[in-house]
Image 1 (cartoon, one colour):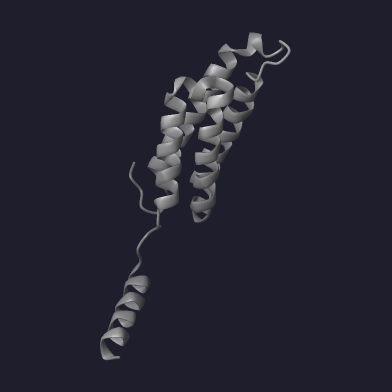
Image 2: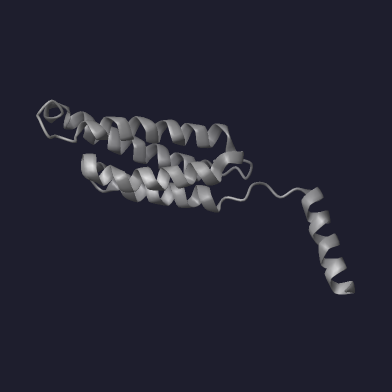
Length: 124
């Protein structure tokens, strides 16, 4: 399950967050049609969070920006659905942070380049 070529743990945590937020949004759907209610935001935030999580798994090169959007959306989910009973916010913040911190796989080519840079620093 741990794959260094993709931010799998970040994607799974973000997907769980979206599922929690979407689930609470579905439970509050009867309140969505009342005037002044913001519970319809839970449905929208949950669907966008699940989409971002799947995009994170499909396009790992954009993990930094997708992780930042996931963090922002996890914070905004507090307004519509109380953050998916707080679990959605916690999982979203953890998944987004892991996505932003993910660096990608280390290849032999990048290791050679970094050792060449180290040699040039030592020689100067």
